[in-house]
Length: 191
Image 1 (tube, rainbow, N blue to C red):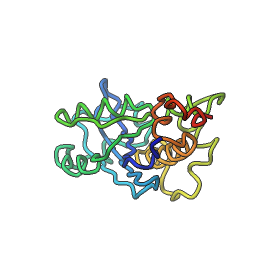
Image 2: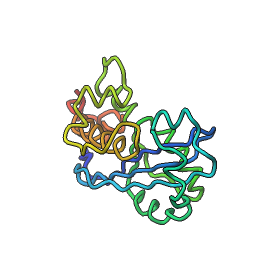
Image 3: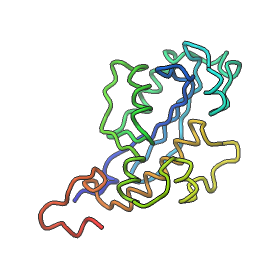
């Protein structure tokens, strides 16, 4: 069995402009190295198209908030450096991956761990697996700075990182985190 902490992870969250497909307005990346959550990095960027009203209602970012922000192309190098990890983690990862893949067409995503799918598998029986419900169920926002709030990239990435560490500890091994059956003789690895 391989210890799940043997990989370096980066937990990401994106906030979009409400277009279909969504364009990036905010991105946060939180490293998890050796099972320890690092300092978040975040970027506000001016999207190619204006922020729609319903997206504003979710994350609270206005077109005025991002009017003087750089374009994504300006921060691409920093973003790629932040995404340089063995594995990527996100809650409902296909959304974040879709945005990142569109913005970084030459980027190859590493292995992906989706905390939504992991939580459903590793902590069955909850009423909801929405990130906000999991934050409440496991007190994942406890001790975060007061200026962070739900549906902003840094907050969501930090609580997803805390959720991932909790799920990683529950899984005990990298193989179980990946959903792989234990090798012969390691049946006790699953609980």
